[in-house]
Image (tube, rainbow, N blue to C red):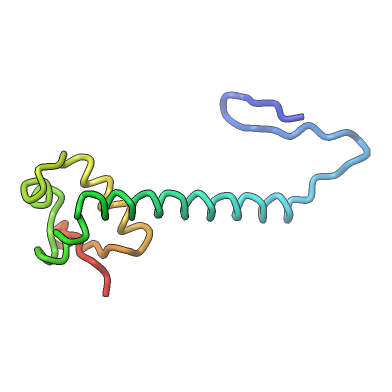
Length: 104
């Protein structure tokens, strides 16, 4: 049984069973990897659908604000899209001037 609490999820075990933390950690890592892949695939789809990769290719390093002006899309949406692309390694981020670009 799983008991949900506000701060954590605890697993109730009978006295005859033991929790294998190694297997639980492996399961959590597999789930995390699968979710990251799902988010990355969705992000790539959005980038292709709205020609964002084309804009990045044409513009070179660009800020979310500049990309919004070039595409007519919402700056906040684009910032989230750019950050997810950078976290997945598809895009590069420069903290010096807050720009994003395609990785080589």
